[in-house]
Image (cartoon, rainbow, N blue to C red; front, side, top):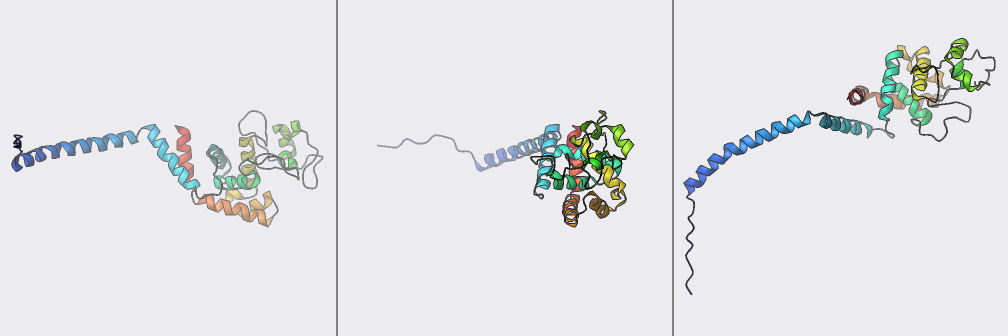
Length: 232
């Protein structure tokens, strides 16, 4: 049986080259348009937020516990008011209550809240029941009353303006810690002295300073990224 001849016309080399020459500008145009379209998409808020989130996650990998992003603006606001580095406040929070993840917010010695204040330190050592370690016999109403705190020279702060200085409220607790650390020199650079005043233990000081220095390595990047996210 005879094979049928293939009658399909074959493109000449010159024609192929001509087609390739025509397709190259088209391909370049498509690539350029795609590139600029992708760049434009990356400026959209959702893409910016994803990039910022990735940056935060990469930084947090250097820590044994993530610094909860929701707390960083609180630390920063306290830094702006009292001049105490926000990374030092974060370090105290990490040591005192593992960023408020402990089961009980009251220690065996009687320290209370997110930043573990002894009641006498919070409401003031001039309170008639204060002595010893500073547990005192202070009612909840007295402990959280800004007027009582002012009367007895305490460090408790009503940070959010709700009329209550509450060691169990994260803003009040962090601002109170910043107030305390500032009074003992942290705002002027006397970090070690201020930390020792917070807890008279060399081991405590060493632990807080370890995290303070660790967080300080990423102070600007973490602060800027988190606050940018908050603003959007």
